[in-house]
Image (cartoon, rainbow over all chains, first blue to last red; front, side, top):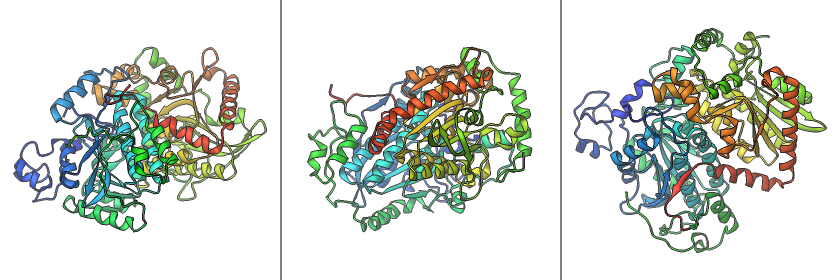
Length: 329
Length: 298
């Protein structure tokens, strides 16, 4: 618990972090083996509690087998502020990477989802509380560039405690950056779908997450800007037990639907099929496996400009040379 | 001050003020902490002071056209010299009564939606938008959450990302997290010398990372929240120096300096075509962040 920190987290959210590690459902105490959990997509068969899902697992839950091509995997954190609290940020990053086997809190890539080509981004709450720093913002933006280039819908599965405090103001700026990137996608007439999972709070909820065309949520997910503890400490309000839950958010009009994890892929597939009726896609089969960016140090900003400049041109123009440095999760 | 619509927090606010008073007694020392204190100083000029000294013909416009009028954000039409603009500012309140009425400058969804509505009007009439940022953060409360605090901040960011008109933001006091950023996605962003701009309050950061609010001074240093830090990090475009002994001692002199900076900023971005303004603003934010990319061929 001490290692994974996040902004605006309630102490009661620690259940989210313990996710199945003790072989027992954190809500109803049903005994569950790791194999059980893999089979049920980490949903408790007894009480329907949705455990947090590691990003590689989430990708394999949603992407058609063998179709995943990662985008932006080379982007890494650099500890820009040389941040040190009780431990250095650099050490926290190294520990998280080696312990979890993922390189950041956000993994993006292109894949097929029930046959539909999509740009899919997945957040991992285990990685420093899913917090959004420079790398999360950059990977998100590169994925969005890629969606614009290939005319793909963007699907993002969120899980985040908020901003990456150890990157200070640069982490706050990722809210602006991701909003701008999503605007570029919207300018291209491409759809975005976010799936908000437990927990999605702070700066991640207050930026791209709530600007998608369609916002889905998993049952029971904590979705709030300020966490229950912050609210209780600041205002001494007594909060109802379902405060910030996906269900409460549905009631107050903040999300489109709550979707059980077992039905998630099918629901996204249905939405994509319907949205395609609007002909956002070129309907070209997904086949490219190049990185989303012009190489030689090009920026996402330049890449978006190229998308605009070469709108309607054959795809080869945008993608440049074929550089197949992809990796499977 | 008459009772303002959308306000039902006075009991809470009393408690918050008592809590703040207690905390004030335990404040840590240190150079950056001096800046934090100056940025929060009670006598520091606030949005309405700058509006009074800089903008003539200010006509305040109220309400978000949806559900309320958030007194933590003031806005309206005004002119700088002879140029009409839309000005939007966060107002903490000068005396205790006003601070209570204005939620200590902590806006709710009503406030962000009011800012959006004013920005959209500015776009319609091709008026520049000037924002004055001064907030501890967005209001953390159950009612604000129910009304979509996160979505209100996000859609305000989107509104400012879309504007074709000139936009200039000045952080005049506390630039508190997403609540501040919501009004600061602009063509030019300036900070006053003793203002701060941070992803989280030093106290909040200390509570989470150090598990000890007493470490707020250390957190303030580590977070890099001063105007010069942010200029170094290329997050802001300039620092407005304060008169000797600080803005709180010289409201008028400070206002003149802020006015000059706003005019300079507006002149710079006025040169661009509307399309170029949107493009450059977006490029600026897309370039934000520091990371390594081992795949880049140099």
